[in-house]
Length: 196
Ligand SMILES: [Ca+2]
Image (cartoon, rainbow, N blue to C red; front, side):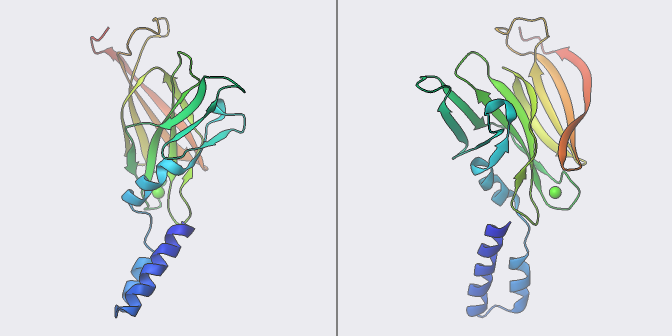
């Protein structure tokens, strides 16, 4: 949160110079990350995503990381910030956090979906470990409820062809424990939407 705090302090100084009182300083200097400030930070953060890069993480620029999949290759190794995103307090500190969907492609047929959490509070927003959600699935919604991420997905059966559109409603739930994101349930049913 250092950058934000400097900005807030700057606002406070201007406020003082323009005649505002010390209460203005106290409020502006210690404001936590707002939802909008966190949302603005997400497209330019570093995300741990071990499968996507040998370094174990990628830094997005305006929501995208990309480089040649191999030296001289026309195929691009890309990671981008997906929709939807969820917001709420995930770790119980009263500050808003984000649930983020990252998508990875090496230029082949696979399109791999990952979930991560971004914690924001008194420090710079930090992305936790990423968890693989599936290949060529649909992320229908991400919510933060009662300190857990609830991810509603459309997936396909393990034996179904990948060319089949994902149609099985799947709900997965994740929490943060000891600074790591981990899955706590994988709720059935699956039940078909009838989409084939
Ligand atoms: Ca929080």
